[in-house]
Image 1 (cartoon, rainbow, N blue to C red):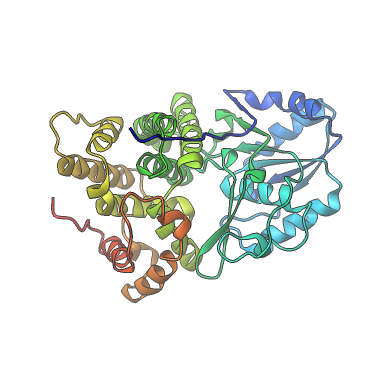
Image 2 (cartoon, rainbow, N blue to C red):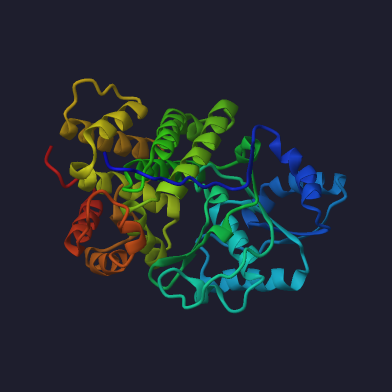
Length: 396
């Protein structure tokens, strides 16, 4: 029997539960630091969420400064500006609170504040420099239920026409605090987009060539929690139970995909964000059913049945083809019902744009290598065409 050796990695400490933000002063004290810089995106400030954090820090007599010049899908100059601010701050600890882009900038700044050069020098596809140390300790606090950024070692940045990443274990959080209370004020569209982002993480991790029994268990539970609660969280955002389950589902999906990896959906989504500035969650949601419509022949029948069950659909007696149809249909219905798009045309993308999207997507070899189905340029082009036309390509 062939030996399978798998490794599972996570941040040093994950603190979860309603009200878990209150643990922050205790954790800062344990780190033995005296000065902190907080990275918070403008949405967190506007929603008053940061007030909860600063009130706790004030009560704990923690010295801090706040940096909020952050934007979604950040380009390199935005990240470099944050790095420079941290270098000048003399902070000994970095706290990131917000959505995935804010947490990504926090991770990058914490590490690169102790390195020379720009973020561009360390990018996965084009960077020439290597990270040599972990930089400052970091505490990551998500305010959405979707990105999983609090438990990954990836920081994503937008380029002119696509995206690239910093990726290294040095970017892992020292502490992640996942408090469902911080997601209660999320508006419906962001709840929907980040929720399907988390679902995509779980589904891609489940079928990744790097999947393991641990990541499979996490991914399936994430799929169950998200698929059974996302409608309520979007349509009835004050439902605390749904918010809690979405928060935990996102965390589980993040732990799963950090170890098993994501693949084709993300590879094709990156150019949508780079070229057309479509949010990461919306890009993944749009492409999820079309990519699974392509890869299902290479997926395990047993796993396809397991995912179908996790999506809440009985799978007894289904062939792999029928299970695939059920999964793709479930994805499409869910995405449509929570108000997200299933057609590239809804974002003003023209048929002639597909070639440039395809040429950029095929370069995402780090992601495509994890797919159970290999991709050619023609395959990617066909998936984009199907997404542009708004209909699956397979005849079931």
